Length: 316
Image (cartoon, rainbow, N blue to C red; front, side):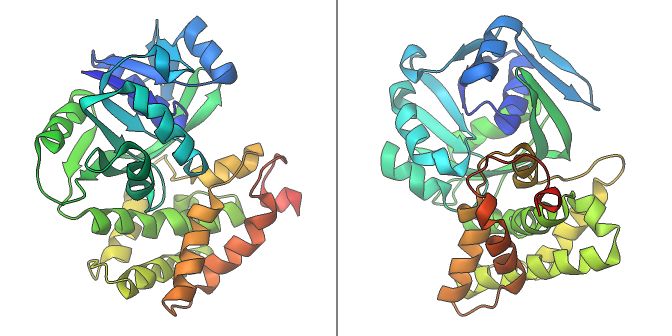
């Protein structure tokens, strides 16, 4: 397959390296120093599961130079979604489809407004990875599982392709039965981990080792659960417990560090409005109390545009 990685940061770089290592024709969309490093030295993936160096790499900043691809893996930051969706258009033919693996729960809708309906599949990935330095991706945790679903929730030729594609790259690909249930089940962990992790400068496994922090983390997870159920999204009764089990299952030498926490450390812009902001606003709309996530939202607001490196503790 000819696959474009729209957003070759931690997540996109990780998946792209894995797919390229499996022999697929992968094109990386990047910019700045990261793009220059990809062109000159290739892409290096650092992981306890085994390092990988993909060289040479086909990488571009301008998507008009790419041509038509079969699949676009969409992994840009949430605040870049609309602009990146427009940039996908030159790479799309009649059969091209997008798999979005972004954080949050609104990506399919936002992307579809630009590229058209029935072009985008929603996905969720359980991996922690970030840019360690230009051209270098560090994989630090997760279970390497990717869930995905069509908007209509039915099996399709496209989901069949993904179920075959990811195992070829040493990843686990699972078609979910319900898109919204899939997205919100992950959002329970993602939002809480990003909230409390950013405030404590910790990963989820580390937080679970402290009984006091674990209690607050669980409270944040339950808030997300209750918002989803108030919206009419059917989640399993044990959704919070399963997310907790997931945290503990990857705890041997790994952690689940939220990308928001890493962005905060590095002084980057945060996805705050699309994560804690979403829970805060929906909680108010559906009359669901969200004191933990709302407190994190308010506390992190002044860092949302980036610019200051270090943890929130150092900044305070």
